[in-house]
Length: 486
Image 1: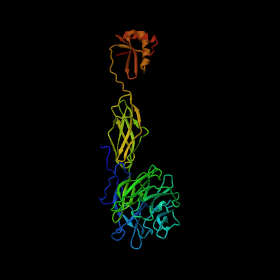
Image 2 (image 1 turned 90 degrees about the horizontal axis):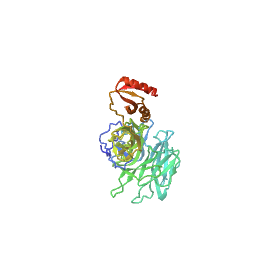
Image 3 (image 1 turned 180 degrees about the vertical axis):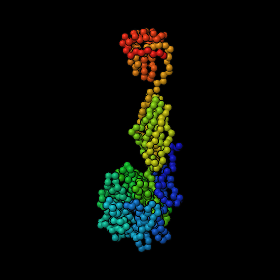
Image 4 (image 1 turned 60 degrees about the horizontal axis):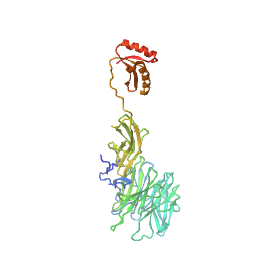
C-alpha cells in the first residue's frame, strides 16, 4: 500500500435523498486544513419565489432546539430587501419561512445562553455611512427587535468600516467576533479587505482587539479546534482583470489573534457559515454560483495524524518476538501506519502498513515483531502518514527473553549418586568440589534441566556399589543424596 494517498474518504453521513451530482473537491497536499464534500445548491432564488436573475447571499446557519437547521440569507425581492430564512430537517432540503427577518441584507445570528437569538449586522448612521456593528434580539429567531447602541463601532485605522461578523466561543469561555472591513471611500481599484476582531464575555459588550487578524479576506466564520486554537474560514479575493472570483481559505491561530498565512482550498464561494450537529458533524453553508444560491458541504477537519500508546505498548515478549500496539487518530484523512524498530533509534526495520480510514477516529494498531535476537534491547515507534503530514510516536523499548534451554539426552548407562539439585551453576560447583574429594574423577557436573544443576558421582557398575557409595555420601553430609540410573 502506498505511504501517501491523495483521495480522502469523506464520510457522507447525512440521511439524504440527494442526487448523485455532488463531487468531492481535490485538496492540495500539505496545505489543507478542511476537507469538503460539496452537496451542491440547497436553496435557490426560484425556491423562495424570486424572479429569474436574482440571487441569495450571506447565509448564517443555526441549529434549532428541535434539531432542525435554519439558514438566514440576504435577498432583494422588489421593495423589501433584507434578511429572510428557511428551515430544514436534514440540512439539505429547505422550506422558506414566511416574512422578513430584518431589513439589512447581511447578518450573523447567534443563539444566546438564555435561549434567545441575537442578529449582528452592519449599521448605518442614517446618512449612508456605516458606523459599526449593531444587533437585534429575538425570542423565537423569527421576529427581531433592534437593540440600542453599537456592539462594535467605527472608525477603524485608515478609514475602514466593519462589515459582517462571525463569532466563536473560545476555550476559556469568552467570545470572539471576527469582522471584515473595507475602506469607506471605496477607491477603484479597491485594496484588499482586512479582518479584525473583538472580544466579549456576554455577547453584548464587545472590545475591539488591537491589530489586524488577516489581510486579503472577508466575511469570516470561525471554528474552535479540538486543541483550543481558532480556525478562520473566509473568502479570499483573487483579483484578476476579469473580476474578483472568490474561493474559501483558512488560517489558524493558537491564541485566536496571530494567524498563520491563509491557506486556499479548491472550494469556491463566499460568506461561509457553519453548524455543528448534535452528533459532532460539521455542515458549511456558503453563497456561490451566478446568480448566487446557498450551497452546503459536509466538512471534515484534516491534519497530520495524532499518535500515542496504550499503558502497555508491548506484550507477549519472547526470545525472538514481541507484540506492540499504538493509537492512531487519522485526523480526517486516510492514513497509513506502521511500526519502525531496531536495536537503536535508527529503526532499521519496519512492519507492513496498516490502513486507518479517514472517518475512523482514534484506532488501535498493532503488529508482532518477529526474527528478533534473544536477550537484546529493541527500540520501536509508531509512524503514521497522511496527505497533510507525517507523525512519529515517542521512542519505546523492550528487551527480549533469553533463549529457551534446549538440552539433549545425557545417558551414561550406569548407576550414579546425585548429591544435590542446584538452581544455579555457581552453587552446584561449590558442591562439586566436595564430591570430588569423596569420589575423585568420577564426580562431575550435570545439567538435567534448564534450571537444574547436579553434582553427581557417575560410572558405578552395580546397584550394590552405588548403595555403598550413597552411605558414604550421606555420612559425609550429603543428606539429600539419591541413587539414579541413567
